[in-house]
Length: 189
Ligand SMILES: CSCCC(=O)C(=O)COP(=O)(O)O
Ligand SMILES: [Zn+2]
Image (spheres, rainbow, N blue to C red):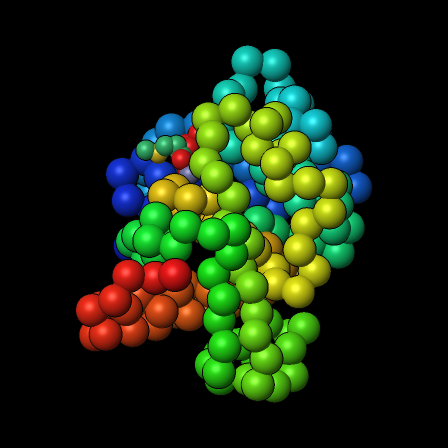
């Protein structure tokens, strides 16, 4: 994620499921492109650190929400890419629609490029409980991720590799949309 420029400064957070009751997640703060073992801690599925005093990511509740709702998910990645940030500010509605891209097939749910896929865009907030409430009890099933407006993208998958492949596909598609708008010189609808 760092190589692609998706975790600038202190942005982004990363987690992986440990078992049915806990996950490993990055500590709050710090540069996620320079992680050591000590920068990763364990929390339960309510976001409480297993070791008292550990301070997990400020966005831990968003990760826990994914693990609770989707038992097959083994990893969740969050980055602050330019494409996700800029595009979600240009698009004023609750979703970014992707259509006609071969890369849509990278999301294993879709077996053809000939579909329209809506990437949900939720309003950003510093209040994670409110964000979880706004996202709703059921995460999207048609795409393994969502965007927080003006903030960045979340993506998940069965494994860390699989989550990364999904994030790469999502970021590629967002970048394509942004490039298209730049070439056309139009604002997004
Ligand atoms: C300048 S980063 C602001 C916080 C954020 O959005 C983020 O992704 C990193 O937060 P964390 O607590 O996980 O380090
Ligand atoms: Zn963030």
